[in-house]
Amino acid sequence: MARNATAGWTRIAVWAAAAAAVANGLLLSGAYIRGRAQASLEAQVTNLRNNLTTLTELQASRRSQLDGDLAAAEARVQAAQSAMPPVETALDVFRVGYALAANSNVVVTSVRRESSEVKDTSIGPVEITTHRVTATGALDACLAYLGSLESLGRGLGLAGVSIQPGPGECSADVLTLGRP
Image (cartoon, rainbow, N blue to C red; front, side, top):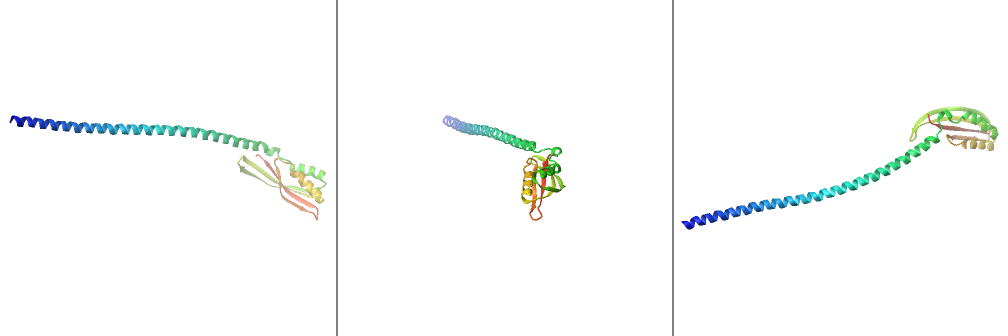
């Protein structure tokens, strides 16, 4: 019976050692899994930080490029606005029409205001005023007169030009542009 008692204690000790070994194995495997998970998370954090740095650099580069594009666009708008005369100082088509006629050997038969409208453009509102100018004279004189009107340049343009050589009549819509 003493032998059975010793064998019983031995079995209990073996079972206790086996249970401790299993518990130890479970703890070690948990620690191993946690260590791998931590290493994986650290690698992901490193990748995310690298990506954030790259994105920040790209954003700064793109912002710098967009700021440059915006400055260039604003400069173009400013140049266009400064080239556009205000309506108050726009070309006096009546006065200029008659003055150019004397130099071109034509007789201005009428200058009348046809229309005026304000349009929204990329540089802001622009007022377009249309005057109908009609003159009589020889074909060369009419051509010279219309050329003189057209060459006045900034803030003025011609449209609807009509030349009738037979009766010696020429007409054009003179468009003036200005800022309201």
